[in-house]
Length: 350
Image (cartoon, rainbow, N blue to C red; front, side, top):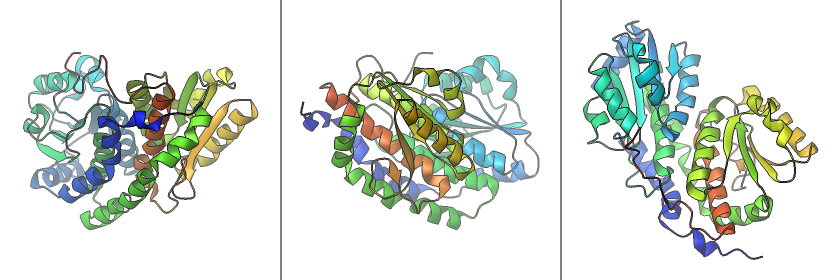
């Protein structure tokens, strides 16, 4: 049965197509600041025992690449959901901790409570899209995304957040800013080319997603940003149940659910574990599951990303196929994607 793709046209769809501009605007605004340089200097002098990364929703999942970047730089780092930090890990809010708080709005309930609890105990670096938010005003340093207004589901704010967090990671680990900016610039054209072919991607997906009842997103390392965020945006934008997890966790239970109505999106990811993820992808297909693998390959292919992109920027590209899936799934059931019934853009209740 033909699917009417005009159904996808709406505010969320236009936010998706505006991601290249949002990335360029954010990159243009990224710059060194005395406040950030001061905190980085204190970090390298051993003034902080650890960095605590915190956020909620896609802002939380998007911190995974930064977690690994800092860990690789031998910087002690923890990733704690803000809702857990404010109730069960409050001891981390002390002068020996450097907190990186990521929140698109800077107004969410958990972030506001964190600011009230902290009261200057631990210095905070804010990563936010809202310059006049409580988070931005009450932090010791801030990095701003310039995604502009966003209708509902995180898309522009998510990819620009990843860009800003890569910039922050480089600042904290001592990478020269000129080198960082050159690397970040390299992702802009691949994103634009991919999104320009959105209709081709959606048409490719329609028969591959037809009849599915379970959807899993799996990966390892930096790709956990896409598995976690991808599952959230699929549920928010299409109301289709989706679960994101590590590839290893998928083998511990969900593997038994494989069948023709189960679709698994595997992220091949970083070279360190590509072979493991590719093996899982082949096993899923051998056991009757439906699967696709997001990996480097021919440009402008739905699941094959630019082969020349630095590994550090893969998380930005990896979310794009998931966004195309939201359009296809919504169109298949005759629904405009990204139109909330119950949720709100800013979560103001814990």
